[in-house]
Image (cartoon, rainbow, N blue to C red; front, side):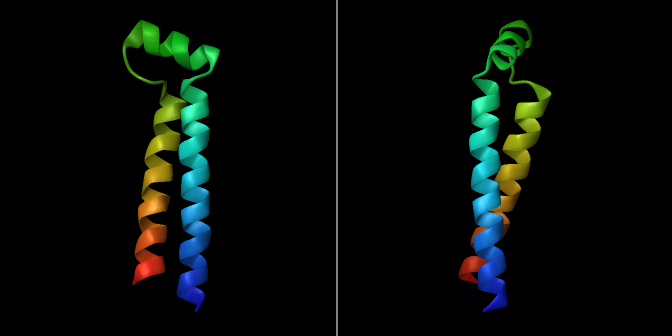
Length: 64
């Protein structure tokens, strides 16, 4: 049961970070960084990567 609860917590945190990264990339500074460099800013990328890892770990713990 404890693995399932940990999976749910990781999944919620991961999805929250993914949404936060999406919001960060849509902000004024994120759009400016994207226009100048052609890629999302460092902060948005860190949130995307971390959110993706947490989401995958959460799903793995949830369905294992």
